[in-house]
Image (cartoon, rainbow, N blue to C red):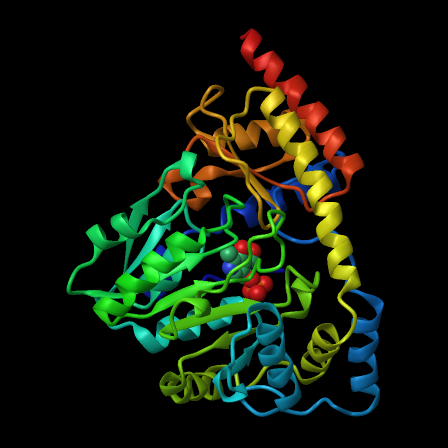
Length: 394
Ligand SMILES: Cc1ncc(COP(=O)(O)O)c(C=O)c1O
């Protein structure tokens, strides 16, 4: 194919947006695999489990029945009912289906919420380390991320006092994420309560990314809606139901902001996929035993991986009890996490995510996902241990 140089001048925002390094690590790993190398994957934040057969069947049935048209822009009423019901069952919270906007994943939901909230120079407070894409959503829309540097010993938790110190007249929202990516930590009830109180006092909303809700190994499970109604909750089916490629998520919005979000959705996305929404109904309404089984298996892997990482000198100062990540301190080996992760990939055949992907607060760290079989985790840990032993020998 001839390459054609287009004359187009791209927007500054699209030129400036950084890559999502985890995807670049994945792509490099795939390129090595294509050359015949065997790679163990700890970089991807994606369940290794298949989507449950009954959920797949619901989508096939929907297609066979011709349920392949646009749906209501806020999503199928039965799906919104099922979402409301699930929050009631888990947290005893009464929501109205009218507060739900079903989206094609949590990612478009985040974009839509920030589109609805932000004007130029508005500030969004978030922790550092953060989920890699958060500042990019904010900056793309002309806003400014304000980073709270968090402490590993406290599980990189956003704490009320530091949030208060970062407030300014331009603060438009506080962004939280629990259970968190990259740390795999669960925010305490006290911190959620304290941050909700500050937000209420200042009259600003909390944007709460709850995509890892349910992937919790400590038993303590919360939604920000237990503490304040002035919150936009983002959640979805990617992680808990192993449905990353289906692209299904939702926003729970304060009632008075729904119309703005709905108009944004209508204009830019129209609606989420119809038959995928049918699968979402099946996911929420059927037995949750497969979810409990995935959580049980993740927990075994989590404990094993933690033990091995600590054993090879990668420090983890607070036990992560949520999502499927461990963020380990590798500064003993290198302060340049990108270079270290490249060497681990090429020399040891193990793909890990460099901490720098999650902000300078995680530089020198490596993120490991245990969404992989115990057998692969064992092999990957053996390879990594051998690599690090050689490093120490110099
Ligand atoms: C914290 C966090 N939020 C949002 C997403 C995106 O999820 P979705 O697949 O629903 O777009 C991810 C994906 O890894 C994530 O880790």
